[in-house]
Amino acid sequence: MQSQDLVKLAEEFGSPLYIYDAEKIKSQYDRLSSAFSKVPRLRINYAVKALSNIAILQLLKSIGSNLDTVSIQEVKLGLYAGFKPEQIIYTPNGVSFEEIEEAAGLGVQINIDNLSVLEHFGTKHPKVPVCIRINPHVMAGGNSNISVGHIDSKFGISIHQMPHILRIVENTKMHINGIHMHTGSDILDIEVFLYAAEILFEAANNFKELDFLDFGSGFKVPYYKGDIETNIEELGKKLTKRFLAFEAAYDRELTLAFEPGKFLVSEAGYFLAKVNVVKQTTSTVFAGIDSGFNHLIRPMLYGSQHFIENISNPKGKERFYTVVGYICETDTFANNRRIAEIKEGDLLCFRNAGAYCFSMSSNYNSRYKPAEVLWKDGKGILIRARETFEDLLKNQILL
Ligand SMILES: *Cc1c(COP(=O)(O)O)cnc(C)c1O
Image 1: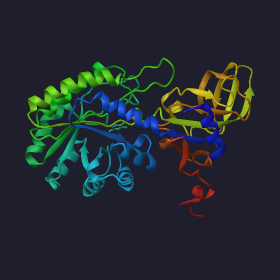
Image 2: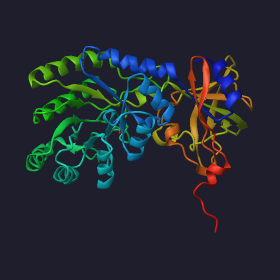
Image 3: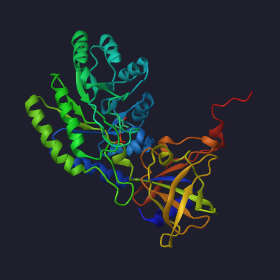
Image 4: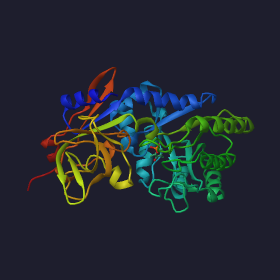
């Protein structure tokens, strides 16, 4: 997208504003499919939690995606957006048994990551096919907040507990149709991913009637110039080879599944906010925008470095700024960042605002959540209206 397009959309829909480029989502989807084009049965399950707007779900459905969901509400959003139950996998962690039963009742693929739940579910519903989430105990990235495969992770059933899994399956006669891992976000090293994949293959060999192997996600996309990213093409080459060899030896048709969130939508997203104040202190220049961690929490929560551009003055001389929000708490988006000279009223654009941005937003400080716009065929389509005062009052009851 061009800066002028973004500026126009802010004029039309106001600020702060989330914008998603449909073409970019599609090209990322195509890129992943192409990397694994030699796999006869490839399935991409978009991770709804990254960006759960129903128009985005519709868009992903139209390009052939399936869904990965982590709550019954995400399952319902997917169904509402037009997905069939068999296009949805449900991978919850720590939810109630009743919620898992409800999801199974809706006909979606259940993925279980806990021995006691596996035993309970297998006993009660031996005929419902179940996928098992394994923890291979492999660290995907460097940030322990987003690495979920390590030893003390709450996710998955430890690979070392395989004998116990097998005993439950044998005793309950339940049907295991898939094996799954998701070692967390930000895969920096393909070899580490392939190492975890070997553990998944080994686990899969314990089951005779699998339909799919789900390798999760965690594909890293670049956030700024020179940032590292997962080399999907190289992963495609290497994992395809291993997968096809495994499938041949397994002697049964298998689907290779992934469930990317960030990879599909991160770079498609732009977050626009207006500069309310430029404030000089003894040591820095603050640019204060009409937003805060109520709208974009990733920099404060994960230390994410979103690239920031002054789209009102893209050619201006660069100066150092600390970009902050309007929340009555420390909410620093970026420290000492080189940005083209900022005047009050300018529009700043945050890149990589597609994944885990709007979906993590809140009403803290009683602020409205921003509007969301889909950029498609050279036009902006409103896909979520900006909140109003009525939204803040909704569900509240005066004494
Ligand atoms: C969050 C999540 C994903 C998506 O991870 P990304 O890093 O956004 O690709 C995939 N699978 C499961 C089970 C998840 O919880």
